[in-house]
Image: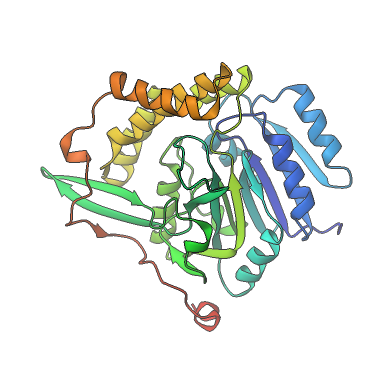
Length: 340
């Protein structure tokens, strides 16, 4: 591998620790470009880090201890040290596929400065009757707003959510935000942003910042990654991090901080909290060796009887919502991108 890496790949835990070895394995197998690999260590077991090192023979690897914190705080402290032209964030439960980095670099060569790969999810919470191996999680995103009782609300809308891969429109297009499962960007662009101590909605905050800077976010359909979606049984160490990451105090603080920064409440706030409730009950059931389908049914039952009810005004997206960020552009030409 070249001694002059063009991209730093940063691996960050999303919900667990135990998937990091498979994540690293996929990166080593499927990344053709010269890269530097950094694993932010939020509390991995020594055996996990040893297996990571074994998978990275010949790879420019750095493991950075960050302690018990949230991803945005750790990333903000690490970012100033990055010297490569590009940076790719990969959650440790996300697995890259063949050609992912080549496609991202090709899109960047055409002028894109921030890029979202198509992100598929492995079936986990919410059983799909279609029995898909993977379904779309995020490829098209819109940020919309409305007013309710004199208050400004926003919603992160994802067209083609859970569509079969063949149903996703092909061709590069702009989006309003990326999610943190995986994204790619010029390092200098990322250094222009600030990273508030948020959970849940941090990716929306970054999307707003990029929009205000006039920097478009592109989605590259030829770059595909997929994430586990809490399918595998978690370890006890995983559960401890999961419950810290989804702690209700952190979620509420993030909601307050987002509203303070941008003036928006989330229209689907209660839904997000109930979704977090289901994730926790599902993960606990899987930890106790409850089979996948039974754990999903258990989480639904617990949600029905014990989770807070969603107020009526949060149930449906109102017709008067309007987009506030960069409109989604469907399948532009390469020439259009090169001159944008």
